[in-house]
Image (cartoon, rainbow, N blue to C red; front, side):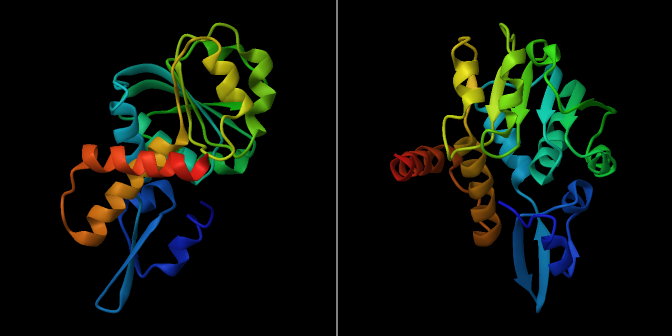
Length: 207
């Protein structure tokens, strides 16, 4: 959702994670003050681990907004090399701040590297990543398309036709939401149980 960066200006205090990724998606109020944090990084972690995607050599992230920074924040702990394809060079400083490893920035244009990485994460809305369709040629890795409406995108459909794994945005939406519920309730929840029910309900709403 939008306004993750603007949320920083609403909070009286923010977590080190929100400061690291320059955004937040969860505001809680205590003692008359608003506290901001983010569950998106945990959402990426749980989503990928549930697909047995962990130790990676190289990854590519399309986009450089708040969701992309959350992705990079987690991926930089499990990947050796990160490529970020950005439409806005002014966002590179905040992206680098979110990462534990140096980032290789690429221009927003088709690139054969999309076929060579272990994982591609698309964070741009709609079919904005369609310009990369011409680059796809027997990719070796998985695609994590962090979108869920409209679905599937042309990128996801094309990737799936190569018989490589495609992870949809519902996974991120559900896992970050479960982490939010744990924050709001103060209770450690049964993630596996909730995931199954939330995914079923979400799919029903989208069909």
